[in-house]
Image (tube, rainbow, N blue to C red; front, side, top):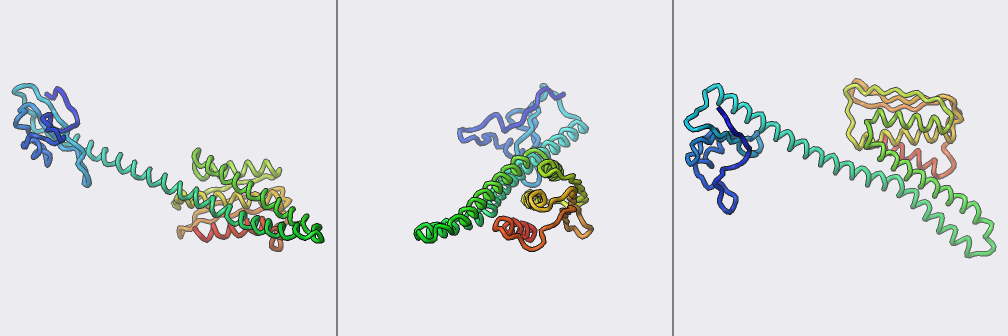
Length: 277
């Protein structure tokens, strides 16, 4: 019977960490018996891509494995190899997902704040020109108002991004949309219904961030401008593999394009996000 098992290489290893026993090295290609260790059987742990080590079985003196026992241990070593391979691939996928998440965060911060900061830079230049001329001081007030609104908008966008990324660690897209619906519904005193039916449509992490941000921006516009009492958010997967996000309310609507720069920028960002999907 088997009295001990372990993972590892030949017990006789040289100073470079290599198997010193030639017979044991040869056994790495299949089931083998270490000639210097007659009571030690070795079974390879591997999958189609990598060799992970050896399963060593120590037998009592004079004992031998029967065929069914050997087949059982061989099957066990194959399953261990496949499990090690699956664990390795899972770790690689986790690292790739982390890298993608970092890229998404960097892109979101750039896309959401770059235009707002550029707009404020222009306003500051205009303000400098106005303040330099005493006769134009009266023109400073509307520029200051626009600049103040731009700063508030940039702060609001940054806060929205931070909320989205914090929530992204806690749940799936449906959960995040439900949280957004509750948040904006409570903020505006609006009854908001949510429907999510993606079916077989799977979204990548960066796509989920875009969808969530579009929904949050639309809900923010609804709360600030629509004067609505009821609204509905639906995220539906179509038969042709498309995803449709719809935000409807019973308010007055936006009508003509918004006059202030932030609202115009918000609509442009939503269009850009949608087109990138």
